[in-house]
Amino acid sequence: MTTHRSPKPLADPDRPVERAVTAALVLATLAGLGWIVGMIYTIAGWPL
Image (cartoon, rainbow, N blue to C red; front, side, top):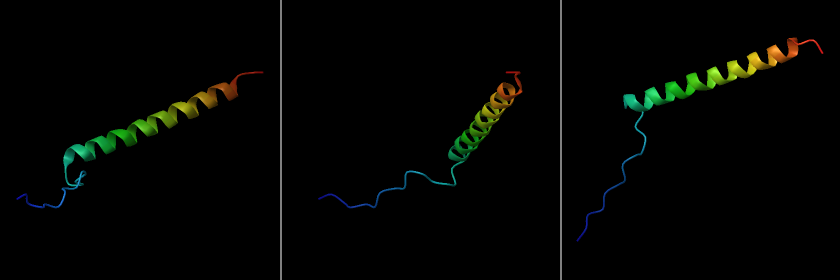
């Protein structure tokens, strides 16, 4: 006979690896947005 166990949650907020991954994703998003804003600023500054 098998025992029935409740499934473990996939993401535990107390684990430092997940916090590091989240921080890396936030920093990458901010860097990407900064790059896009810089490209728009550069293109807008070109004489047409």
